[in-house]
Image 1: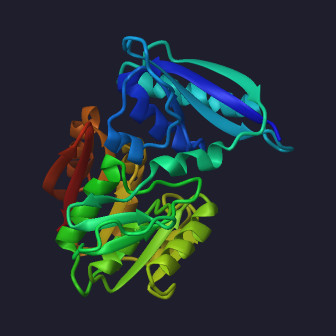
Image 2: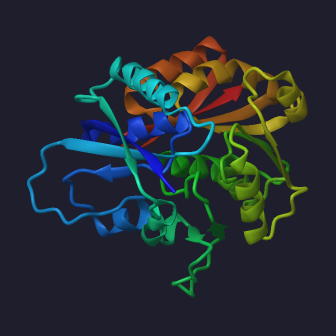
Length: 319
């Protein structure tokens, strides 16, 4: 089997934001090549192949994305989408050269290679553990989330997801109805249910999210009746909006980039109950003021702004 390899030349400071933007157009599983030594914790959490580093860091990074060479794949169109996303990012942050190169590579096991770097870790008192590992700390007294992200979704290790998890834990109650927009492998909805939420719903654009979420529900002993899911775009698809329901949710979580939150937020107001909580993340720190303006524009009361690394979470309330 052959794969198209799309390589973006950028700078190390822009790695995260470019990877997030590429995920929005369907490119996941980035392979990162730079000269920054990784810490042991990063090796556990990041989906990367790690070559030996013998040179001084020059600030240059190469991000590789792989697209299967099968009938129906238009690699030229994909590359044009990549270039358009890079142009958008470069309008607000330095991405260095930002060049794009396409090559072909033979069959590789990049789909599974990342698993050797994803190990159990904590978000405060919550232990997140992959389905292929045993619990190391047998004396752990907190809750345990068993997660298998599959090949297309995150593990919970990223700062944006951890920011959301902390806010959900803070605001969830036994009566909470929660909607997770862009739910991926179902992490946020499952966490909400584990901490006492009454019911969860999730939406996502990727059909793979259905299987990933169902598997993680089973891994954590949660009924599919407690976490319903639909594939579709809640921003412009009224059937998805109707399925979700109106003025129904105590919490809506959206771990999505700022440009999507901009057009999503007016829609979400209709799904939130009065006094409902809107938890957003996926906001690069340079766009914090932009998102605060979005909240103000939509008449939402900002309750908290929390930060981790270069990422920001904004929690607001519908009054």
